[in-house]
Amino acid sequence: MSDHKTQQYDAFMVAALDQAHKGGDAGDVPIGAVVVCHGQIIAAAHNRRIIDADPTAHAEILAIRQAAADLGDWRLGGCTIVVTLEPCCMCAGAIILARIDRLVYGAADPKAGAVDTLYQICTDRRLNHRLEVIAGVRADQCAALLANFFSRQRAMGKK
Image 1 (cartoon, rainbow, N blue to C red):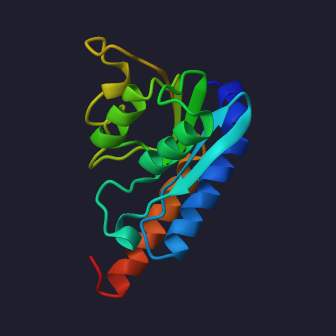
Image 2 (cartoon, rainbow, N blue to C red; image 1 turned 90 degrees about the horizontal axis):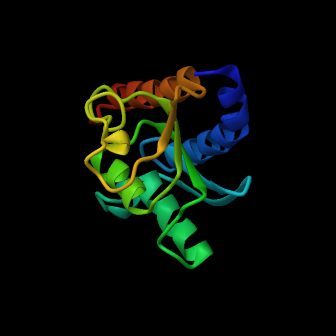
């Protein structure tokens, strides 16, 4: 990834990290996402799976819902989603279905990553939409946030 691409999305990743911290502070897995349209953040969310007892309440899904409501359209062409962790199958599918132009993510997810690690859903030529993927923006910071969260969870005897 070029330094220009990293710098271009750095401030948006900082905003996604802020969302991740909010989720972690609320007791959920610290993953954050923002949707950017025309250089402005139009939606921001963090994981709420534990908080809402909802397995679909991933940061990406919640941010996509907010962005669609803000724009009044399910098609989010012209938008970029920035997320702290590589999306899972569900979230990668939602990104495709929303017709988002670009995905920027921080840390790779070796257990559930469906963009580069385990699957390549966002760039699969068999699907009707593909998008640009930029990986590794503030990856170390994103990974450390998750590692620290799970380390604290284990220390408290939680799964």
